Image 1: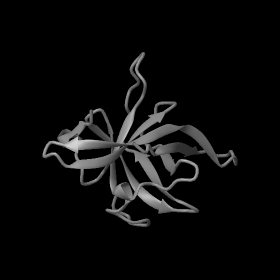
Image 2 (image 1 turned 45 degrees about the horizontal axis):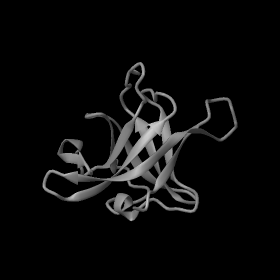
Image 3 (image 1 turned 120 degrees about the vertical axis):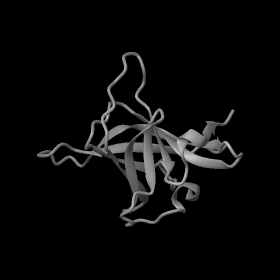
Image 4 (image 1 turned 180 degrees about the horizontal axis):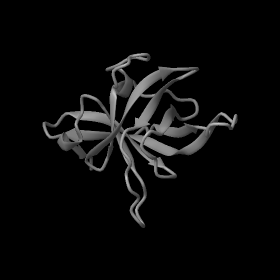
Length: 139
């Protein structure tokens, strides 16, 4: 399988002019819906807990582009969120496509998620037309 990796970045804190900070990594994965249909999603592995109101960007790995399977249902500049971010089964944020030098995702955390001791903080990003309750991870 050809794995697409992504890089998570966040804007520097206000007052600092250092551009974007590294926030973690992620990878694209295929999930199977209950009806048997396969859809692509992105698993995000931020290095820290993302709080309500924070913004992060998802960039394709070096020399890559975001898979069309993830971007084909929406377009850069569309104000309606094309993505829903989940922590486990709970929706916690939304996302949009943005066009810079490369096409990338801008994600906004709408709800805080309390950290769990000993557990890695994970988020999953689904295109808006895929609900996690209908998805099963492929084996």
